[in-house]
Length: 212
Ligand code: NI
Image 1: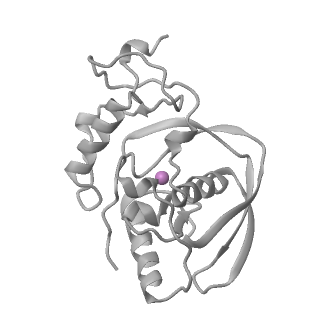
Image 2: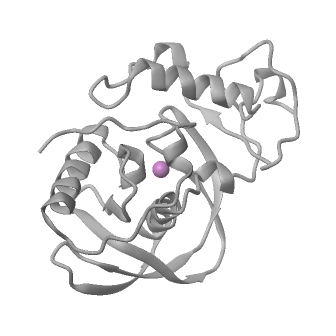
């Protein structure tokens, strides 16, 4: 088992569509084991294979702190019900959160680690995680679902107010300069690229806009 580095936005693999797993062989089992270890190290809720640079349709999700991390192979959402707004983050955007639109409940089908076909209906955090992680496999990111403009706690003076094409907003919690990133998971280049990309895309809000 080993921890795999997590790719940060705007790495192009995060925008690629992952390919279906044909057979759950040793390579896939190793991938699943490593993804579980990586998710544990990151204290995250979910991780998709794209995020560790593998374009295979595999995700791992921790449904609750008491439960085991579950692997979902070739997962598909088969039904969505209702709409809600929820706070969300992503391990490929460490330090950032935003409010996204998600379904109230989802039905999904997938293969478990032994290749068994499973159907589930989920709500709450698991529904959100399934939508988020399956999106990753299709190259879709949580910033694509952001709706409400949230405030950013770290001011960037050169930043201009904007209307973004994906009507996006991201909230940084705490001062990013003070955040220590786990070096087993993130490269400093990745963290810098993320900040630059978010600045360039004008995804981040200026502190002056907080009270708008
Ligand atoms: Ni994510």
